[in-house]
Length: 421
Image (cartoon, rainbow, N blue to C red; front, side, top):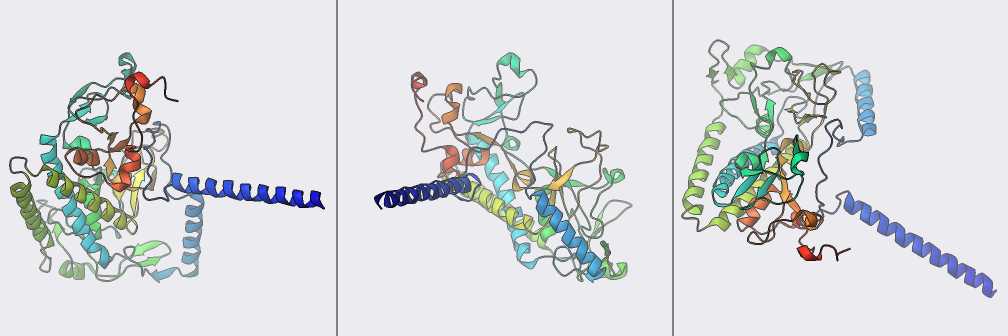
């Protein structure tokens, strides 16, 4: 009897230990996969050029989605598309978001242009490494050609705003539903603008320099092909501005709104106010950095909201981005395996880092302290260059980047490296 009781107790202990380890495993797995919004590890090193970008959506989900769309086309070959923006109409709740993102981008670039004049910025002469500080770090991570002769050390020079953040360009689409692709022969006639601006235009922002077509009625899908039954005369009467083919002059329609002019005036007023209030003898540097960081987060959050509804494509091997339902057919890819594709891009779903590429830099806790040592690089944290610039200018550290900056890690001294496990 006692043996039976003891065996049951042992089995119960084993079950409890197994459940405990299982819960700990799944909890750690959830944290590593980003389920905890307050946890963000240091970004992984750059992938090899021959490797393809990971798919944001698994291939099984993409195949199941394609099968479902194919079955829907077979069941109803001719149907009117009801959900915007696939039917050519705008999403009303995202029109205001597009204007906020456009103004936030302008405010961000304005703030960074002022902070760069006050906070020193270093950029490697041979690679894309950036460091915020008076003197560049000593971490040997240079991956440029012939960097082995320098033991992968960086050669620093003064940097600018374009080194802090990168906005890839995209072809501007006049009609994102009727003509969603740009062919190779149109590569010089179609303008290229920053992809984030193109996303705002497709979401409802009106710019006089880059006209776009706005529909009042949804389009139809006939066996997978988009058909628009609105007459061209009606579209010219009710539509937006169009390009003049002879002089490439923008011709305004009668019913065009003045949102672009209002946006331009508001941005100029905001810029003048910031210049008068925040840049007087450098007294309010902290306030300038806080507003710049707020513009950064406002832009990122707005872009994420728009990318949930509007398609953005990127090449799996190069940084090319195209905003629209499909990728373009311009043969300009020079990345790995481009010969087998005849220079065409390998399009896939884009992420926020493809549209707004943050340059991650090493976090400096004490700008007046010693330089970052290569032997202590595993104890240092990282952050986007915009966030690091604002933090060194006096802005508080955001909660979402505290773990990435490794503020809870105690840095050992240079003479204590061998004593630390």
